[in-house]
Amino acid sequence: MTGAAKHPKIVAVYGSPRRKGNTATLLKKAVNGAQDGGARVEEIVLRDLKMSPCLEIYGCNKAGECLLKDDFQKARDLILASQGLILASPVFFYTVSAHTKILMDRFQSLWVKKYWVEQNRRDQQTFNRKGLFIAAGATKGKKLFDGILLSLRYFFEVIDMELWKALLYRGLDFEGDVLKHPQYLDEAYQAGKEFAEALSHGSKI
Ligand SMILES: Cc1cc2nc3c(=O)[nH]c(=O)nc-3n(C[C@H](O)[C@H](O)[C@H](O)COP(=O)(O)O)c2cc1C
Image (cartoon, rainbow, N blue to C red):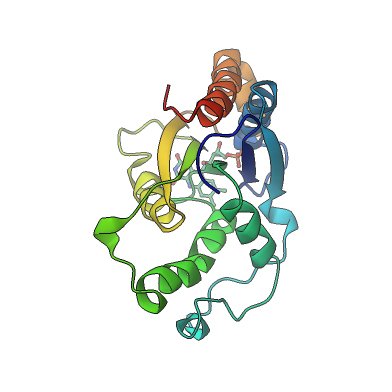
């Protein structure tokens, strides 16, 4: 799905094992903002899905289709039918959560499809989807998001997605910590709304 649409389709992916954790709370705000901005939003809670990690059997070599049949296919199809993705993950050991990483790794089948099966050229890559990324970590170090942003960049490339904005919050540890920062919640709502508007105007704002 490409181009601008009056009511763009956005998929919101909850990547934390905590249902009401910091990233889930921020993502819910962004979802509310996106809906108020005119988007149709489909929510995926990764902890509720049955999704095997990639087993590296490369059954996808033949036609670019993952041979493991589980909830990945539904999540993949929703993401590929959308114009925008809002992905939220906590920082776990300087990268995304295991739930989020499993989803990313299963998209290796799409990488195989694009570059091995269809032999697309990476220098002719087009980016026709946009992503809003939300992350939270407990500590405050300068490099806290370096690892997670690298993983994200290569994952987004596979799904033809450019990073539209990243909301990165330090110093959030316990469930509910984000509620002490109403400005973060306002920022997430506003970003969701502007994201929907950017998708519907086909601009970056
Ligand atoms: C397995 C695990 C690994 C973590 N690794 C880090 C880390 O590398 N750096 C950090 O600052 N916080 C780390 N944290 C703390 C979480 O990032 C932090 O609590 C975050 O706010 C959780 O977000 P959530 O409530 O959305 O799950 C880790 C927590 C867990 C459970």
